[in-house]
Length: 440
Image 1 (cartoon, rainbow, N blue to C red):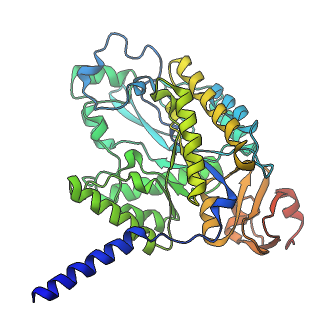
Image 2 (cartoon, rainbow, N blue to C red):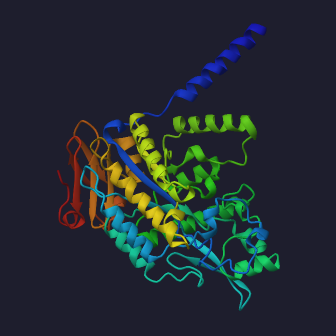
């Protein structure tokens, strides 16, 4: 009996080691591709504050909203100028394949505002926000950035907070009512009022996701293909729900916070094994890990942050991974213009230096990375063009299905088959596809 127990323990240990070291295989060699993906959360969020003077006369510490980096006290909804300046920065940096840098803003699809005049909460959805957040020309700037092929939105959240707690706690005290009346989205305990909390009903979260996906498709002209959970908080149930709704690319699995896991060291082990198991067994999902940090406004030395991000980029390539850069909206949209300038300069500096690394990178969005990993070929709509890639060492046929063509405005067409030579990148005008069927 004792010997059996020893063998079982050794078997479990060996199984754990195998699970810990195995990784899903990719069709392409990412060391040769040298890809960069730019992921950024919180875009479209009506918060934290609408203006620079929003906290004037209020004791923000007494609100007890939770703990977060100090720079977030001035985090605000982006405006047209921010998007236009970022568009210029991105378009000025071109990968070795001739395709400009593409930025992936992960969007919050809606917001709640409190109307003091009639004492009621109002719901807003993109491209509209509460009246405290006037942003003239913002959506025109977003559309233009998409048309230039440098702005590729994906999904982040419905609201980025639990709406029931937002409405109850946002009015629970005189201070909370004053803060809410000014359009500030923080409220007592807001840090823990997470949108995907296990305390919320499955029905409510399912309905919110369905509505968010419908809004996303309407405002951005295509379905969402990638998601990052708000506050990095989600469970296996959410992943199954996302996959059922067509969201098969999941960002930042390594950062996942699952309240159902154990605490302390057992919880960290559970988290690690869960991540490895999911990557090995969930063949319909692609997990993309953020392995480079570009958060310059949370540091006293923005140049050092850029340098570390560049070194992280080199390390990712050496490990055979795409370099996936995390850079939150607060780096570019803030009530302090100096912080905005710091963030934009850091992004510009990073892209300039990255374009000189090892012959230069290629810039990809999440869905392209996922397609290349699985199939070796990929496509992305970039303004009025399709960017088609073959990252393998042999010729491959890329198929555009009826549904994929419909997202490009080509409704009612038969599938299109395009032969791509080894390593080929093809930029095809949509107008050409409207006139022709199969291309080679």
